[in-house]
Image 1: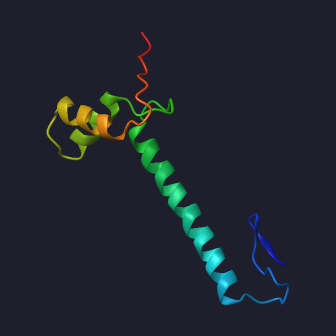
Image 2: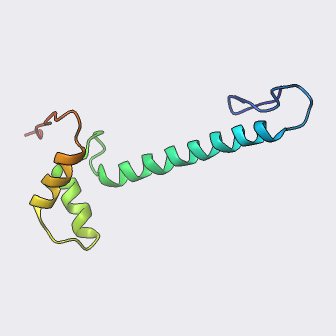
Length: 92
């Protein structure tokens, strides 16, 4: 068994990777890369770094990307994807 980054690579102890072992490692590495891309995308929108994408942050990102400046579009997006419907009030 070879351990790389917290995952078992050579699970049968032969000292070489079989196809299934190679596939498992490949999928794990792909998932790690996808997680990193998602984290970076979230941080792109979360301008103030508080762990939430507020409507104003989403509006700014959409406008920066060339979309029309519309809070209606932002509210529609948030209504569709905000599953817990918790409203975070801004700090005053």
